[in-house]
Length: 132
Image 1 (cartoon, rainbow, N blue to C red):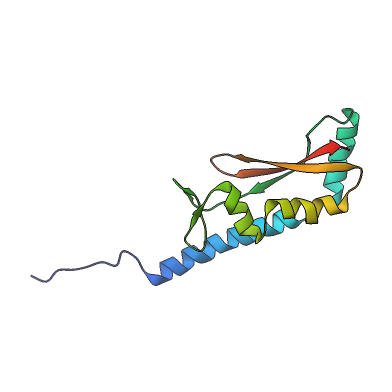
Image 2 (image 1 turned 180 degrees about the vertical axis):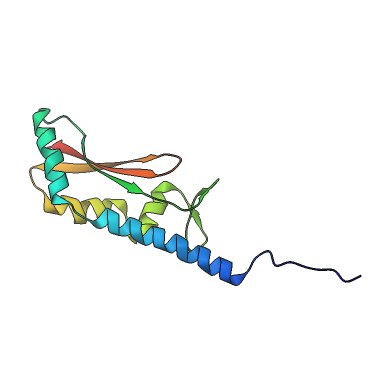
């Protein structure tokens, strides 16, 4: 009796999955690096109206992931990373460098900080304004 075997893993499936993860990572990088002056200005007007409330959220950006594992977020290189490593993996540099070079370098009179919130479907990256 001849046994039949079925392919469980194919190289094509692995390549397709890896490419899909890479597209999500690349889209996160573009989204995080896009400085939206109009949206930020609108939020800053609201911040002024509050009397400069401390740690006022002026930017909230979604960071998407394709695969969540017990150890973190699955990446295109096959490694699962924590949120603190996943965002820098998408960017290719640290979150602190993102805040300093993409955002803080384009504003004056106030300082930007950030927060990260994990949910079941998305990671929320927020920039917070603090008056100098």
